[in-house]
Length: 210
Image (tube, rainbow, N blue to C red; front, side, top):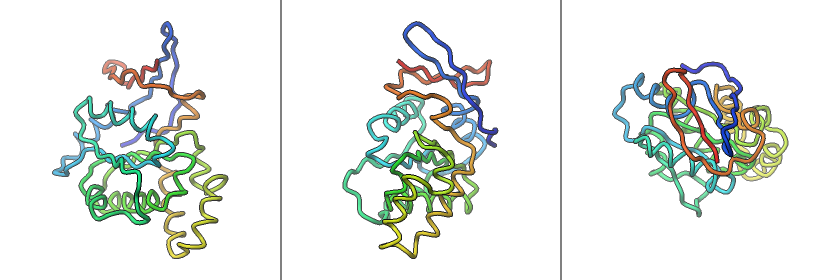
């Protein structure tokens, strides 16, 4: 199971910075996969708001998971409808671990909110793991739907009043799960993920940035 949220340690190595995340990242995925025998098609499902993280954090994370031979589902379609497709619904059902990348505009997408609702349904039904990543957004913003999340729901209330309470409950729930807060672990922009390796002796996952 998850350990409590913790700050990462930072070390300088020449022109690189190393961040160590206790039991997070690839090692956590591997441990979770070993502890959850399954016949699902995908090991990991990535939920994200494309315009916020597609070309930075999410693409780097996806590449490293694939490099570790972790079967990862990612939906790169740019023109998505207002409701999740049957194919995506099936992909969520067929995944073992869900990584929800909560960014500034995540709540502005009804697609993402429906996706999150489905993910939490699978967590409840199958006992699967959900790992939230708070990417440049404070967990309290997600939990209480303030700031950019409040602005998003003002717009949603006009067209999707029947879903708003369900979406808010889902955000409140995911914000209470143990995960990774980019504002705690690093205060500057992540430019590129150079390597993601496992330090088995220290029980740490090492993120090496250039």
